[in-house]
Image (cartoon, rainbow, N blue to C red; front, side, top):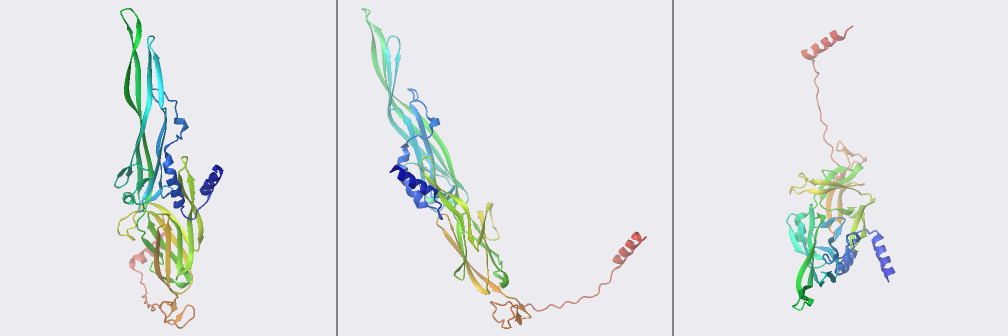
Length: 399
């Protein structure tokens, strides 16, 4: 059974997905979550031999992943889950004896309990603090939304508190009047705490928001029918992984820009990484990462964007065409934009089309000719300044 489970794990992590496998990852991490609390220490280098004065052999606490996420990107429009873990090794009973030469004192140490204290602050435009009292912890979209287009950092401030009860049996050497000596023992009980503190940051880019467009080609939604080109610019705080372009409801071009794989961390938590992919048919897509670019001439909201996407294609035909560009981000959000573009042939003297047709009344197919412009030219008489310059040059350069 263990071999079968391992094969399933290897298959899941090595298989390339055409879309983010969020359900696979969520189901796995949700099932793993209860076993991550009070689990086994993973860092062998931090393990030490326990002693009476320090009975803790190891202590670990960390944030593992927030999901759904891809790479280090998370949506600011969806609730998220934050997976975490803690582990420790501690002796349940320790004993130390001290021989004073007269009495043998005994010191005993009993582990009473271990208390995890884990608080996380989401550092964003507005900070949001919550306790890790469940696994995975719930992170509402409202806490992530203010950070769309920026970074959000989960900051762990945690501790493991080890409470021990100490029982000390301490003898006092006593001799009576007959000079008979013995040890009189007293028992003392006290409590001591050993604390291990933890600090960690886990940072993500937060995606979401509107996607304004700019029709770059043809800029005026009209073009020469013998060179039909389409070019659109989209500004976003999202990464897109597929795009489709239709012409009058028929597929004109398709593109797939990324594929996805599952990763398996040392603690067993799964994540998703993306890889660039070039798989397109008559639709070129170029992604440019910007630095908080504000396209003032396209969008008057004043918002800044991290990505500029260029979509380009070509087609044939005359007349008015309806083109629809649709694309999707990695978190299941789909967008589309419709464009009405006129493709017209040129005409000569408003009588003949460049295709030889004399029936050019359909203005959606033929562009009217501009009337000829008559221009008159008058002879230019050189001024005195020009003549003077010519005479001077002649005098200077004559042999």
